[in-house]
Every structure is written in structure tokens, then in C-alpha cells.
Image (cartoon, rainbow over all chains, first blue to last red; front, top):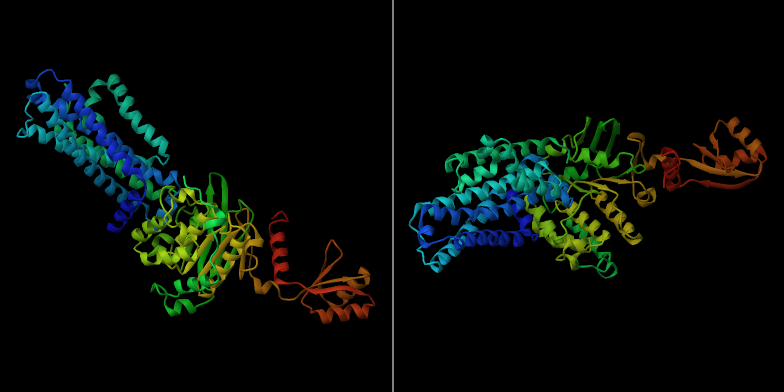
Length: 244
Length: 337
């Protein structure tokens, strides 16, 4: 299994995907955090718990690109016709799916660490610029960033699994983005009680977003983990039985 | 995107590279035992009652044949006959509806180290356009735990050394085909399965492929080569399996084909045909007036003609190529290419 994951990692490093998407994910989070800090009314507001949440909970914004990277890790093999070569090396396709999920999780975690550190840096500088003191000692800061790591990791796993299930890369990316942009909102409008249990809302709970009707961070983590596990399991099953 | 000049960089290797091909594949990789290499003729690939349906279409219909070690087996049939589907079932990329394909008694997915046991070139295989040829081979070597030291000499053998660090997106069709061959041989496999390997190659490349096939078969490898064009593989195959509409129509060793068919032309047909009947010679009158006789040599046929008082205008033993072509055209209903 280590060889398979190492092979997948080499595959990823020998294309240009990461070199474009990771900086873009960082920039996206960067912009979201900067916007949130600069739109605060006062230094006192920034230093409050609600202020910290407004400023830092958007650190996970870049995870949307991590989700796309996850999809490309799996569905990209069909786009370029490299899937056959992969399955010739590893005929047990569920092992391929498991290796890709493992790599996806690692990429998601790493991207989460990079964006969190970058956003922590920009937030502390902007706090100073706004005349506020960045509350490094506040556990809220570290709880949000820990949530961001989990959020990024789980979104990467979900991306890989969606790409295993939907082999058409364009369709898979469109479906995932459509879910985040509109489908989940529409469902919430239709069935409001359901809202907080949906994946994006669960993710927002993980990063402690200021919202009225939302799960606790722990419950949010559990719910998003359950979604990721369910989609990943479905992906592994389907990969093993379907003709390549 | 880098465009590679096909003339400049896709030159086929000089003959000394064939020594390199041999050098590369003499069991240095430690996968072949002497027993395996000497057991020429042992049926290594066994297709047993293979059926694959897509909806209500039977792409492969109760197909059985074998491919032995040390021989080039041509797997022939028109486009759409089911060759690629058979290969996909052989390689575990598609699940047979019924029946099985075994490699030394095992399904592909049950092989301990598939890339060392079997190498393949499939028509549908693609490359990531942004990955270089060397990196493509590195990826496979890493995941399959193969010796990465084989990569450079292999790229040399297929004539891609100069383009090894260019992105495959800029490769010509022929260069991709040669990278596919290098991929197939990366694990120094005992069994080699090729689907239309001459596709995209110029005539020089087709000759090159034939020579490589011969060398590898002579080393004891099991070679199974699919083609819809007999001329591409006709000169190199030891054995042919011909399918049409998913069914087997012929399976024979080429040596058995060329036993003793003689073509004869005479000035007067009727007395010659009567004489052949009287002599009990197995014969057939062709549309153009030639007669093919099976089981008699040219001396005997000349004698029969003399006794019948007819003049022989042409008398020739059929060569292997003619017999193979006749079998192929007959098997595919005369519509082949």
C-alpha cells in the first residue's frame, strides 16, 4: 500500500496540478480572511470571540480547490486515459481507490496547514494595522484552525471519492461546485430543519462559523466525517466491481 | 505545447539496439527461471469459453484458444470482431460475462506481480499530456516496485532517449506507440500482449516491431498480438487465432498450414480434373482457372498431368504467406483488409 500511495504521489508531482492549485487555494483563503478583517467596525469587535470567528472561519475557503484537486486525482485518470495503465499495475481497483483516498487526505491536510499558517500571518498583520491585538493566546483561534485542517482534509477525501464515482471529470467538478453553490442552499430553503445536517453546513460548524442554526463543532466534524466515509466507501465498492 | 519533429527525433534505433533489447531481457531482472524459458510450446495464455455481452450484444461469444510460450500468436479478425474486448477480459479491465482467461492458470488480478508477468500495449491507453516519458515510466516502476534502472536503457531500445524529458503531449502517434512498448517491457514480462502494435508506425516502424516480436518470442516469451491487418504480422506469426463476430473461426500453427498445397494451371481443365479425381488427389478449382491440390508434391502432379496428356502452364508450391492469406480471407468472409 505504501508503494501505491508513493506511486500516486509521484503521479501528482509529475503533472502541474499542485503547482497551480495550492497557491490558488492559499490566495483564495487569504483574500477571504483579509476581507473579513478589513470589514470589521472596530478593534474591540475584532478581538471579541465573534470577531475572531468572522475573521478566521473563512480560512477554509480555499478547500473548494482542494476538493477539485481530489476529483482530478481520481477522475483525471479517465480524462487522459491513464486509468488502464494504473489498473494494469494494480488490478485490484479498490486498492487503487484506497491509495488515492489516502493521498487525497494527505494533500488536504497539507493544504490546510499551509493555508492556516498563511491566514494566521495575514490576520495578525491586518489586526495590527486596524489597531487591534491579535489574540494568539485565545483558544478560539486554535480551535478554528484545527477545524480548518479537518475541513480541508475531509473535502479532499470527498473530492477523490466523488471523482471515483463520477468518472467524467468535468461532470464531477460541475456537480460538486453546483452542490456547494446552489443545491445545498436550495435544499435548506425547501426543508429548513434539514439544513444544518448537510455537508457544507457541517463544515461551517467545524470552523465555528457565526450562524444561528448550526451544529456544535464536534457534531459538525462527526457529520462531515460520516459523509466522507460514506462516499469513500461507495467509491471503493464501485471501483472494485465496475468494468474499467 | 511542444511539437516534436517526427523526422528528427523518432528515428528507429540502429541494429545494435537489438542487442540491447536482448541484453535487457535475458532474465537479468530475475523473474525467469531456466525452466520457464525453455518450456517452449507450453500453453501460457488460455482463453476458456469466454463470453462478454454488452446489453444484448455479444462482443465475445464462447471463445476458446491458447497462446504458447516462445511463439508469436497472431490474434486476427476484422475491426469489431472482439479482439480488444478479449484483451480487456484477459487483463482484468472488464469482467467476463462467463468463462475465463488464465495466464499460467491464474486470472490477471490474481497474479502476484502483474507487471513482471505480463506486459501489454492497448489501443485505448493514454498518457497524461503534461508528464514526461521518463516520469511516466517512473510512476509505474514506483507503484509496481520495478527496477527503475531499466528505464533509461529501455527508452534507448525504443528510440526515445532524446525525447525522454519532454511532455508526452507533444509526442507523435508513433512516439506514443513506442512509449507504450517501453511501458509494456518495463517489468521484463514473460508474457506480452499487444493490441494493434503497428498502429501509427511508418513502414520502417512496422518492420522494427516485427523484429522485436521475433527476438522476444525466441527468448521464450509468450507473444499474443492482435491485428486486423494480416500484412502487418503475417511474416512473424508462428500461430494464428482468427475470430469473427466474437467467435473463433480458425486456430492453427502456421507450419501446419503450408503442408503441401500446390497450385497448378493447365491448358485443358476437364481432362486434368478427371485425372486428379482418378488419382484420388484432394483438389479444388479456383475461379481464375487455377487448381489447388493438397497432399501431393509437384512431381506427382506433373506426372498426373503428363499421363492425362495436358500441358502444364504453371506449377508452384504455395508459400506460407499465401496459405495464411487464403485462410484469413476465407475466415473473415473475404471482406478483410
